[in-house]
Structure formats: C-alpha cells, structure tokens
Image (cartoon, rainbow, N blue to C red; front, side, top):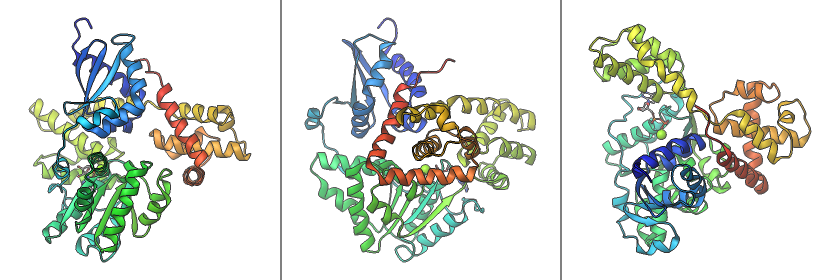
Length: 452
Ligand code: ADP
Ligand code: MG
C-alpha cells in the first residue's frame, strides 16, 4: 500500500464515492464510516451499526471495491465492521455481543433546544405548526397521527421535538426516534430474539415521535413491525407524530395499509420559507446567538440562501465566524466574501443530472432520450416521461420549471401532477416498481466521477 495509511485510502475512496452515489445515499450510508485496517488485500471499514453494515454489504460492496481497486490492488476485498465487530457474512451474526436495546437507543431523546418558542411561524409552515401545538396540548384526542412532510431543512425535526418538549412538560411519556433508529432496533431485536423487549419498549409509551419515516419505505419487515406498533398505540389513543420528506401518497414503496394509516390523521406540509420569513428567522437566530448584525447583512444572507432554513443558519454562522476571525463587525463586504464559495460548492455537489436520469429511463423503456424530450404522447412514452420527471425530482435539485423545460416543454403544474401520477403508477404495479428501482440502481452504479 505504499506510504499511504488506511485512513488516507478510505478518505480518498469516500471522496470518489461521494461523486458516484446520490447525496441522501452518501449521507445515510457512507458518511460515518472510517478506514480501520488494510492487510493482505483486505480493507476493513468501520461502520456505525449492523444495519449500515448489512446495507453496504448487500448493495454497495461491488461499487466500493471497484473504487478501491484504483487506490489499492486489483484483488482488494472490503469488510465492514460494526463497533469493532466483523460483519462480512450472516454467519458472523452469532458472535456479536448483545447490547440492551434501550441502551442502543439512548441518543433518541427529545432535544430541549427545539421548542415552539424558537420556531418562526409564517404561511409556509403555519398549518404544521398549529397542528403540532394541538397535538402537544391534547395528545391522542385530535389528529392521530400527525404527519408532517416537506423538503430538507424546513423545520420538521424541530417541530417534532417541540411537540415532545411540550408533552414532557405535561408529564407525558414521550419517545422520539428516527425511523433509522427504529429500523436498527427492530433488526437487532429480531436477530437477538428479543422482539418482546422491542415491543414493550415501543408500545408502552404515550407519545411516539418518528422522524423521517420515508427511511422505512420499502423495508418490508420494518414496515410490518411499524404497522403493528402503530395500531397498538393508535387503539390505545396514544399520540403518534411522524415526519417525512414527502406526503404518504408520493411514497411509491410504502405498503398500502401503512399509507392508509398515515392518512387517517392530519397531513401538513412545510414549504420553503419566502424572503420575509427567511429574514425573520435570521433575525431570531442572530438574536439567540447574541450577534449584532445589521439588517443589510441579514438581507444579503436571506437573498443568497434560498432553499431552506438549515442553509440559512449555515450562512449566518459562517458570516459570524468570519467576522470573529478578522475581528470586525459583520458588514456587507465581509458577508459577501464569507458567502462566496458556498454557492459554487453547492452546484458542484449536484452530481446526478436530469440528462443522466432521462438517459437511464429512456434506456429502460427502450426509447430514446429525444422521445422523452419531445411532445410525443403515446401511452408508453408518456409513462416513461412521467417516471423520468418523478425520478429527477427525487434525485436532483431541479425545479419543476426546469424539469418541464427538459421534458417536452411542460409547465410546472403539469410536472407536479405527472410526478404524483408516476408515484401512484409505481405503487399500483409491482413490475413498474421493479423497473423503477432498477433504473435508480443502474444510475447510481454507472455514474462516473466527473472531471474536476
Ligand atoms: P428538517 O427536519 O425539516 O430537515 P430541521 O428541523 O432539522 O429540518 O431544521 C433545520 C434547522 O433549521 C434547525 O436548526 C431548525 O431549528 C431550523 N429551523 C427550521 N425551520 C425553522 C423555523 N421556522 N424557525 C426557526 N428555526 C427553524
Ligand atoms: Mg429532519
């Protein structure tokens, strides 16, 4: 391996993988991994949980090994290891030590930082906010479940914790858990034959807050387990609140009966904040941080960071940090400088393009990309076009306007409708679902690292 340490090799591999897989994929599965050792052409990668090990082993081993070949040896093999325990085949399960489920899940508590008080309400999130307050005040009596959906960084997790904090203040027993943690717990419980413990843990609480439920969609066993948990809590009038990156009807891989459960209660969306809201949020955050920032600087930040609140906070933090570094108060010049490379970095990281999706979908439907881009309206082309629109929505940051332009010059409302239709088509047909997953998979594995 020459002079390079295993850490350096794995860092380099991660750098390449980051370009080859989608952003959510990278963040879910790869970001928390580390290079542990490299010996006899075997590279050991440390991963945070068995679930991640299993996923990577099953779905990304070949991509990872291909990437490593260029960095190490043509016959390199990768092994995933959880907390110091090997995981490279199911046979190893038996040697894993047991950890109490409750202990594994201990980080999943309500975060006192996220309260209703520090949440800025506007038209973009009012329904979600009001219903969250309602649920916190009268758990189990009103909307059950409360289902909050929206894009990243729009305050869904914040609202979920806020419900939890308000409920805790009323001595209600609350459990906040990410859907990933729920899945992890479930898998561990099954493997270690401790499903009874799992059931008790989840089904005895008065309020269950599940974050990012989209994570379990398509994971049949977890869905099944969640379904039963849901029913027991619901029958006992215990409150359930859920967040997701899209509404139930747009989750093509979600089992029908779970979808209908989610639709029993109230579904509330959060939208990206408009300029005034962004400004109000910035003002509130600056005040919280005790930073004295003039309104022209706040306006600049609000203009530059348009997509979500997380981005907004990141920009604000950057400006504050930059000003501290050069020991002045933030002014317009300084803020412009501090924000300069953020925008460019953002566009570089968008590595799946709409053209790539169009190509993959056209291939799979045995059509040509120009068919999809044309105005052709026969059934098959229209279906392929819808699927492409839906997939572009999922995999890229393209706007509805852009997607419409790329695919036959349609207006945004047409695109939005087409995406919903595609989701329900995919739902209704197992063979289309299979096809959809294959396209998605092929796109991720075929993608070449882009030239710098
Ligand atoms: P999501 O779960 O939707 O991806 P988060 O709840 O994690 O987003 O929000 C990202 C960050 O933005 C958090 O720090 C959160 O406190 C903040 N945030 C989001 N929306 C608001 C809002 N309306 N008012 C104040 N802070 C917000
Ligand atoms: Mg969240």
